Length: 249
Length: 112
Image 1: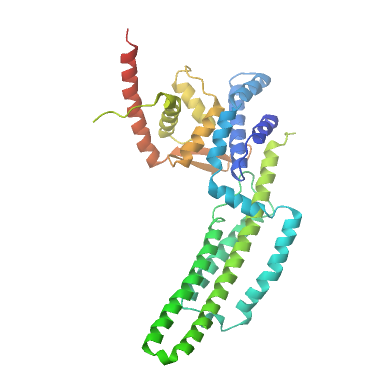
Image 2 (image 1 turned 180 degrees about the horizontal axis):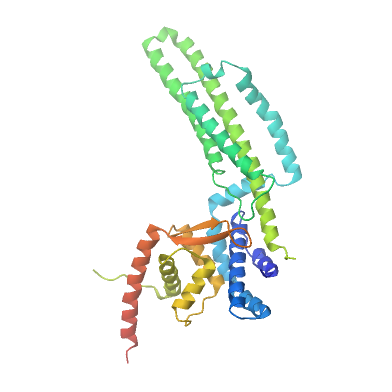
């Protein structure tokens, strides 16, 4: 394997695309450079001449790099990248930690310390709990992959990670849906027995607040989980990209 | 029915797409193998600058015409290879037909 780190650094500097796309593109180019170099040397070319030949073949023009940037800078990947990238500096990480410390215990505490919470909530709470369990399962699986002591070389597997924001939104949607479904049921009951209206409305408030506590706690938990795991994945990808760009000994 | 018109400005791009899709139709390949296949099948008449393939490959992948997959191999631990999707297969057939028609017309145009 020859050292093409200088050329890869030159490409990397002109390739303004977010992770993980950037390190994937660089790794793909690096492996192809290695292959072409080996092919040329095996074909009888002197290593120095082969290196120059490879450099010429992989001299990506500004137009080619611009096109690659356009392909990989989709609106969704950019917004995801910016959202998770917000917590990369130390101060921002500290602030996020404090938010997690002070915001999640009251919500999660309500969840665990109030044994009747689930019984008090809307019928849709079973769906909320099932989706939350799915989100936690995905989160734990990804945490096990991303916090392995020895990381595999190359792109970080992100499969499943981006389902966590979707699960967060689904929890919020189901929480709000629960409120409206229960309001509709209360309205039906009030129409039959209008003299019990106050009681039904109080019951609805009780159901709605319990449902929202479950939905918000779950959404907060899955959102925080995604945030930390996404940052961990970005950190590993940056390390992987830096390793590709480092000169080989 | 009237044949669709081909914009001359898009010729190079469409030619590259047709060649890449046809090569991948013959089997899964890494970027390097793809360039080599095009050069060898062209009887060494065509020079493929490897760096120019990436924007085309990534664009075809984004459009769902080819599929890239990473495998655990090679000196760097991972490497990417591409294969044709069913959508890509259909598109490649259309492109080849288009090229055959175009080359026929072009040879008529170039007749003295």
